[in-house]
Amino acid sequence: MRYFEDFAPGDVIELGSRTITKDGIVAFAREFDPQPFHTDEAAAARTIYGGLLASGWHTGSLAMRILYDGLLKDTVSLGSPGVDELRWLKPVRPGDTLSLRMTILETIPSRSKPDRGLVRSLMEMRNQHGEVVLTIRGLSLLGRRPA
Image (cartoon, rainbow, N blue to C red):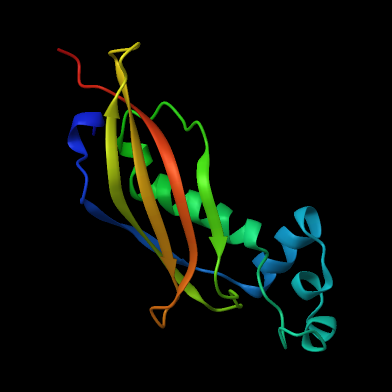
């Protein structure tokens, strides 16, 4: 297991990748973000986007899954108090393969609860062309190594 002490500012962690499918885009959007450019190929073709694209919330959810699989499942994660910034920078299309990278910005030991610490990070999701499609400046609460 990895603890708070195992992270330092400047660390870069490659978390993994996933390919997004048309069926996945449409299924997610029908339930959570049913705008036509996410749910209907013909309607999406007539928009400024020129075709079907994933909801930003879908892309963010995929980032969360990659974060879990690539890191959190092997840490003493205590959750997160939130994100400071979330940006959708480029459309995500069916067939895109998205990879996630995390850069540790700051580590802050808790003063009031010595069993934990806060890790500030920047996550960047890139498509198969190396273009950044999503950024998240977030916070992770991690347990400290037992004495």
